Length: 328
Image (cartoon, rainbow, N blue to C red; front, side, top):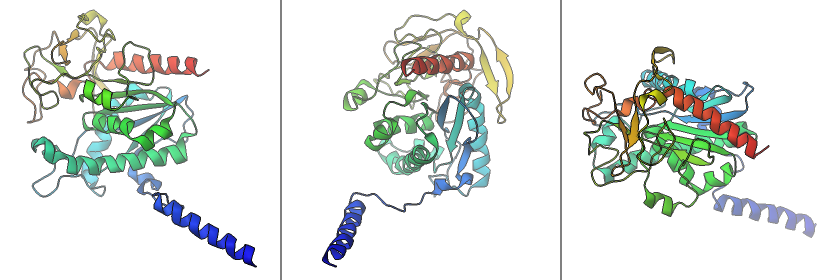
């Protein structure tokens, strides 16, 4: 009888200890529900998985700074924005894209030190979605992390998170964090982060920000800041100019993901040694306006994926094949 009492007592203590460590035996998640995923391709057969984080589509207002998961209208735009980039990634992969309480465009109009309150809400959802995906859907498949703008920020945050690092282990093919900045200081503070140095290295971050040659300031790369980048045309990290002949095709897509216009040899580009931005050649800024009020003319943020669509599409396959060869 004493042994039985002691066994029950030990189980009780174990449960207390588990709870104290922040682990729940019956923890539920909103990501149990399929409607909280823009894409949940669990039945598709593929070599790898893509976990994609959508860019900012929610505008916000004076009282609201994070998208609601009940906002059907914004969720339609969310799905459309995801579709615009999906074709780059999903040729040999299952596609997973969670809805999340993303920060609104109005958050980026705030002072930098005021934004984190709302961005941390967005990241809480992304982390929850990713951990749920790992626990229930991944099954040791190689993973391509991908995002644009705010979505790129969220992907970098995932890589910095120690709990996510343990889950990823050696499954990361690459992280395409496009349209966001990352600095040498961030790398020194997070030794697990590695920037891509060539076209086929793995477990790396691919990042760049497109702008005209006249730009010396943007919301993402303020004056005096240097971000780390790779040129998506020649896959070099120095200021070697890639001519437009190296551009396999700019593709302009709609909310269904359909390519409405494709232009081969669209533009050349080089990395600015001072800013680390991707200086885009052969493009008229008036023909490709910034659209968003937070950017000035000559900042091609909205076109980061579109200008280099076919080169990125090809590179996803190159890196996945390199990963598969390394892990044969």
